[in-house]
Image (tube, rainbow, N blue to C red; front, side, top):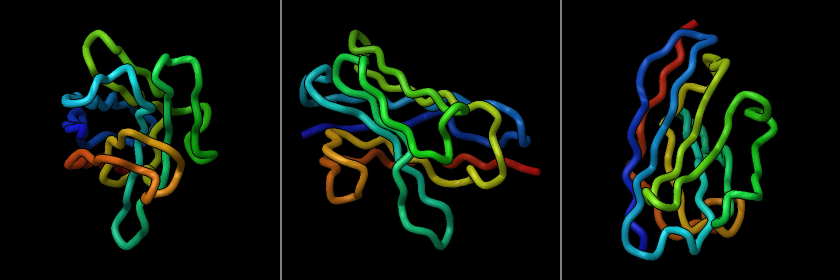
Length: 121
């Protein structure tokens, strides 16, 4: 079983940046794909980004391509999501997800508790 704890959320103005972190424990960190999802009020949880165990394969939702960058540090058992050029529509609770087998909620083994990101216009 994997335990995940997110940090780094907050309030930022449109055009600003935030970096989220996801500290993992339990199963060996470098054995699985890690990802991020988000859920805005009244909307379903949606895929944002994923990175494979070695950090050489990436997947991004079209809505964040070119603005968000996912990364990981296997020595620290931590994943990251660098978010640049933030827009008000990026406002949501962001969840770390692992192991990740696909882009849908049923494809996720464990979830973090979530961290709020609010982008003001």
